[in-house]
Image 1 (cartoon, rainbow, N blue to C red):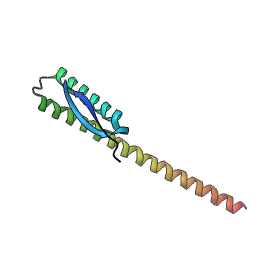
Image 2 (image 1 turned 90 degrees about the horizontal axis):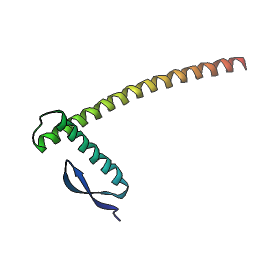
Image 3 (image 1 turned 60 degrees about the horizontal axis):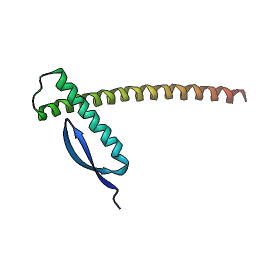
Image 4 (image 1 turned 30 degrees about the vertical axis):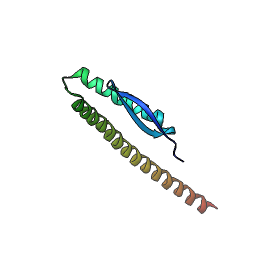
Amino acid sequence: MSDQQTINISIFDKEYQVSCQHDEIQALRDSAYYLDSKMREIKANGSVLGLDRLAVMAALNIANEYLAVEQQKKILLSQSDDQNSQTRDKLDAAISRLKSII
């Protein structure tokens, strides 16, 4: 049984009907709001003409933000792995010392 629901979203004063799962409605609305705000920000800061070009510029900005976050995530995961490895090495050394005492 499908839990699909059609909702109306507004992006740059245009209405769209989009289907999604019931539990994804808020995320879809948040995404539409974010895209709308990015398009308005670009429009306010420049001379981008045309809805298509505005949408492409917003998509490029959002993709750039996403890739920057992904890169930061990779760095943080690598740092976390390094810290976990160091902690594991310290625990192994402590266990070895305890075993030698016992």
